[in-house]
Figure 1: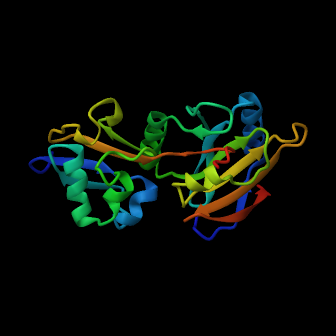
Figure 2: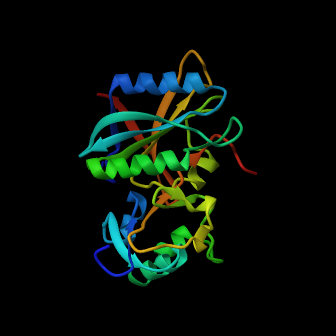
Figure 3: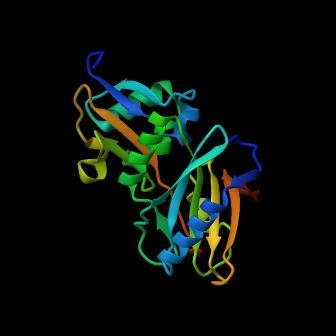
Length: 138
Length: 100
């Protein structure tokens, strides 16, 4: 994904998978990534949240390292990092901004604040600055 | 193992802007800290992203030696031998928690 891409073409199947993952983990936050190559989303990976409590996520470091190593060999990149906000809106929190160490990825948040109507929004978070990325169904 | 004492270091995407885009670089050193200092001489700013000012690995960065997290070994002081592979990975973390 180029640094300037402001539209995320998200296949419906991936959107549904993220919502299903968020519901399965609730009241805890879920987390995962979508691999990309040359701007195309390829495969979604559910990852393990090792952070305690219901308002934080941290991908298991060993899992993340194996994944990054695998992506490197395949020529894939971390195109999307997703997590859920089970009880709050789909907008980056202060914690999300402070811990956004992947400026090349799109951060996607799935809110379950209205359990009947999950809300997905996507952002780039670069040097503490949030810019929204439009989600288009691919 | 091409060079005497050479350690291969895997650079994650977010830190490749410090290594001119290279995903793998070679370095020398007898410990993780020495390898990171060796790299910092060539790629200024890289070590600061990985280590606290006191030299310990930052809370939201993980460093692996041959796939083992150095937090479970001796941290930055973890010894190395030629042919070892170091992996560095920034945390993927956040959450709805509002700190105040």
